Length: 488
Image 1 (tube, rainbow, N blue to C red):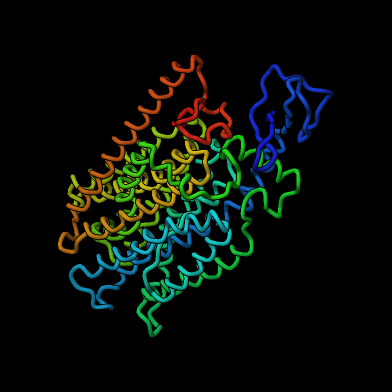
Image 2: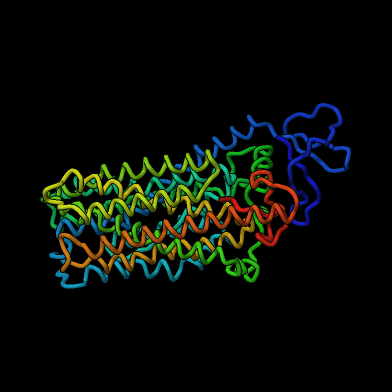
């Protein structure tokens, strides 16, 4: 693999792909910089060295971030498990009290996420995320409301655009695994009958303590970025920087500029992405918060209900990985986002349309489909819009608004599942299905528009460009750049 290197004001280098016309002096070794006949400098990168570098990230960075997200998801989903064990009765909750608690749960996250995203860019996600995790763990131990965080900002520092979906899927699969593990953990904790506390309180203590302890390890272990990782040697750090410049960011580790970064909202596609985030947020939060109640309609006791949430959540993680790996393999994003929405829609429609009590197996299968279509759109949508934003500051801003907006829909989910509609919850299930259908439609429309716009750009330029052949250094201005092509 060859990268062309020229002068750059920020780091002294700027990379692009070498053309077939370049001629080399002597026989260069991988990692060696050589001169071509046109005066540019070329860096030869060994594919073997690059695979070894990515493997280091997969082993040393991805598991830690996935475990952090697993604990986060445990802290967020434990209210649903606790409700099946009598949380409402213990606390004397009446009417809409439980729904209000769930709604308040999301308020701090939505209010602080954009600010924390910018802080993460300035001081590094390796410091901000563990500190947030520590705080959330303490809140869980105190049985108070907490909020979510995203490792997307951290993962973006290590992987190319074509590698991102499957890695981010492994990261987000931790959410489905956490939901499954939460059911198993609740199953075990709810066997505690000898303590002085209500059994559901032990669930918060166990999960909160685990979160706090792991946050301390993460603070010590995580590097700020690939180029600053202590487990890489000098050559590997340079290679990591080259990879990000060629196929991720226009300028690696660019200083955050407020005005320039917020210009991302001048692009109409950003608003379309936010609309899709809204549509995916309702199914995602409905399944994560209320799956125990949905499965509770099957007629099992508290212990079995929590146990029966495990298999659907595990299958959701598997489907997420299948869709993400297929997306990276094909280099297509929007068809797989739409497929996830479609699974959600079908799952909820089936559950609403059948007699659950007489068709238990069909109803249980529908709960599997619900989980298939919740995580996948979230993961692949994040990858999709990040693939089309080479400017690091703009990427941070859109992520810091888009992800919290999806989580804000937890307020909607929290208030459509009303106790008065139990155990069928028909209005809530129908509303969730409608959001899934709308998300699928908007995704297909945006993807089709990107295809058409790419063809228009090719006609205007008089040449056909493939998005994977355009170094991201040329794409800092986004759609305003002549070479820009949509990664759809």
